[in-house]
Image 1: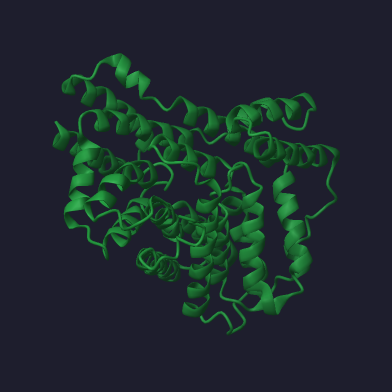
Image 2: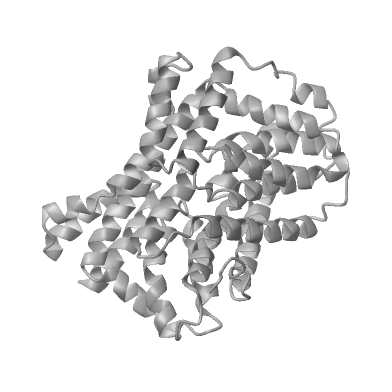
Length: 424
């Protein structure tokens, strides 16, 4: 059954890609069917439902929905970019750093993805930069801070790492993410010749037009930002449970009438939540039936001192071309780390291979098939109204960029770049 369970996992991913259906729902159904035919009891299947992950995702995303619905995070982001709009010479660097800083304190982790491409590409085009390059730098900046422990994705990754039997690598994982995405941003700047500034066609747009809707923070937005800071401090300093903490502070915002409750529920990305918990439930059944052990055996059979980290990193990237990194490759591949490492004599510190998997997954997000690239493509379409030929060109550019930096990140994983914070 080990081989069959692994085929079911691959089939679930393929089915999602082929029919455009939520892989989480497919995975929940597959877990039930696979468990039934594999002799796994119903109670064991239910026990494998990632309740902690569900609470973290739901709580964080619900809080994020409130902050998004009253415009506090978007307005905060626009105000930050308005202050740096005059620094044209350093604009690409500022885009990366500001998006990094926003993601570090963003509990939902998606503000940069959903808001920043349009804003940064608008300003960048006005300044004469390649808008696609600027959009990519915005997403890479977000990815650099995505493993923040106060954010839903960082918190989720840490739970997955902990469940795999590893100690607390929270800050080393965050630091390694910053390292690799800083390198990747430099690569993108060089590939796109970012020092060459020219007119990119926004002839009727001015900086003032880009920021024309900026107003002072209203009372609800001020309260939201203060509560956000309090929530971050609670999670970081008091070590409170991220999901439950988010629910507590969400209630504070609702009682303060900072957002409409129905709008907050409607704005919660349930699709992303089910995507993550669904595949987690299927992975539990696959693990019970020996599928993950078989996968680890397959990786171990081709892994060497020089290929193990790149293989895990690039496999994570390939899987992320079609799914969220936190939902597909990260929970699937991290359980294989110990066995793969043991097969080559434990030459790597576990943190190195874990970081290779996590960062490999996020380097692929600028692919137009993934969320980051899709948002860049949507922003480009809205700004420039390109014809089919030009849109296809941007699509190919994003796809090639994602493949290129994923390969580079996979190779760098073998250089010791992730050992900086290792004291052993």
